[in-house]
Image (cartoon, rainbow, N blue to C red):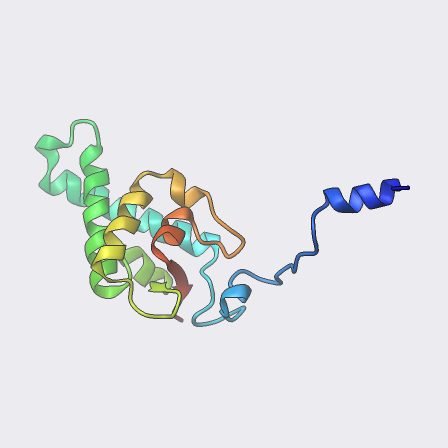
Length: 148
């Protein structure tokens, strides 16, 4: 006969290994360079990038920026070019972060373009996994890490 404990353990699912910190299952260290960037530095870096995009859109594209969409377009272009060329945006650079592939290489322009487009859609970066990789990073196989 089946007991309540047997049924309860089945409903809880199989055994799963819990990870101590974000990036552990990806072979990343807990702290220091190459560790997964945490929420606050990511958010501050994004705010810096958004502010820079707003300033550039206001200065150079004021006549077309009636509804603020030029801010988003400038953010997309800045992200795509900077991450593609240098692996980081101005906000990432100030916060000591870099976008890398899972094997530690630069993202490149193709991945940077898709990542930037998904970033501008807002929802993909908000949905993230246990390694703090948003859907925009998971879609292109990248990760945002600390470099200092």
